[in-house]
Amino acid sequence: MNRRTFLTRSITISIAASAAALLSGCGFRLRGRDSLPTLPTLALEGDTTSAVAQQVAIRLQQLGTQVVAGAPWRVTLGTPALIERRLGGDGRASREHELTLSTTLSVQERASNAYHLNNVALTTNTRIRVSDDDLLNRETLMMEAEQTLARQLSQRIIERLANVEGMQ
Image 1 (cartoon, rainbow, N blue to C red):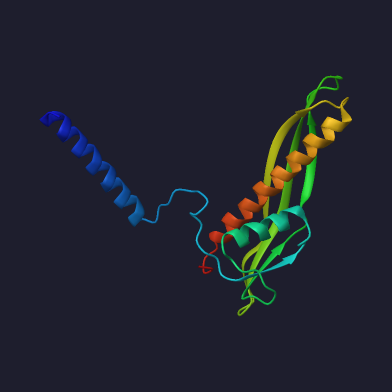
Image 2 (cartoon, rainbow, N blue to C red; image 1 turned 90 degrees about the horizontal axis):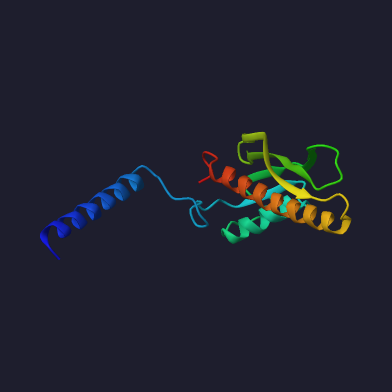
């Protein structure tokens, strides 16, 4: 290895190390499975039987967060609403559908009864193309899309919880 190659690599490594140190110093973290902070013990209330609430409970468990009644933080989930919109003309061919799943989220500190989030609306949506003539396939595609939306919405709820001031 010649001197020029050695110097180029050394400079590149030092720039990368400096950038990493700078970004970590300001609190920057890459998003991913383990990038969310640990949440305190929570109580899930509201519509806890929906697919979204079940996904939230599963995800919280995966993160190591305890969910118990009477916890210091109350997380109230609204009833999810699914809105389906048909896009395009009235032809007999396949048609694109836009599905939007939304719910509300409230976070209350039990000790002070202070709301840190109060009925915040969270939504997620997707588009799928289905044929209205193929009913069996249509129902399968719609169910899969609804399950995907429930997972996405639960992830947004977890991310929102992780950003509530004072919870950490």
